Length: 218
Image (cartoon, rainbow, N blue to C red; front, side, top):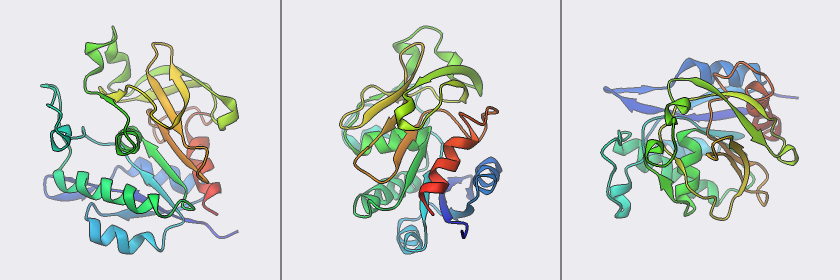
């Protein structure tokens, strides 16, 4: 079968549109063709028609002040143009439920906030040893096998997390209770994971997560 086109959301950093190579490598290894989507709403909308699947990538924090919520002192917000383009893309995808979507780290948080989930702005305020979720640290997750996710070791780099699942199913947690994956079972494929499968060594919790998105996009 032809390899599907997988759109990956890029960031604006220091005047560059940027995306880690690990995302390109894992999509290629999973059988897809990675296409970089610039953080510009109009361009993404035009490109969406040619995409078979979408990955919302990781990045800096969501600026909740635009939603009337005071920012935590530890917040380091993404470029405002990226945030605007990301939420606009999620709205476009709401009207295209047939397009498979995978959110990774920030991408999962964006999916959740877009649908009304509450965001923990700094994990250190609510759980001890929150640093085990940062700096590509390895920890275990327990996942619902019915959601097609494996349990096991993952790599994480985040200090924020969803506080609830709103209308999503919560299908994975870490042993300290942090929500690690959400799923909308009413959509063809609409999954968010809090960890970084593109940097996780275990195929079961790394490559296979991205391969599921690619297979759903064929």
